[in-house]
Length: 190
Image 1 (cartoon, rainbow, N blue to C red):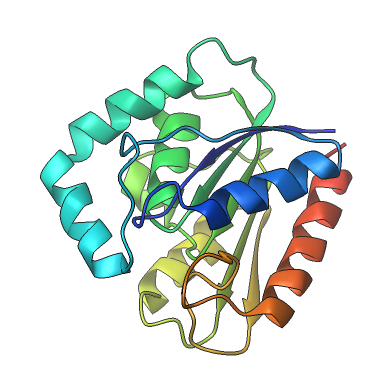
Image 2 (cartoon, rainbow, N blue to C red):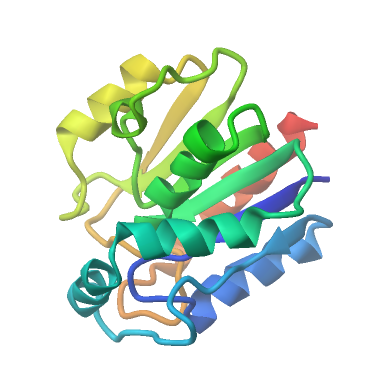
């Protein structure tokens, strides 16, 4: 089973993020869910993005580094939307060589974000909806061309946080499919 460091989306460490972590734990995985917002959550993504911008990237990365301190190498870094960038930064810049795999929900980050080459032996999966208003075609293309063992899994619809059952964007059918796919992917990592 995998050890996973899961970073929340811009709305914060919502009950839905914690529910997803519990689902992974129930499958036998060890899951860490640091709170980059110190307990603050938001009812909409836009307000969360404003808060993220007010905190600043340096604060978020400092908090993420503290969350990763002491964790072993060979973990899966996972991120949800905003958390994708945090997870990618840790695995590729702050702690290169420490990741066993990368799990991205609601985004497929282009490796150019991190100003480094994606390791040839680092598998990654990104799950998102086809019409997600936060999705960027250029990021998808960068992920497809820059991540040697990367996979983008597309689901129908336009909901961003489709797996977070505490938001108005939750889609139970897609969440169930995505969870099944994630668990299979984690099992394949060994």
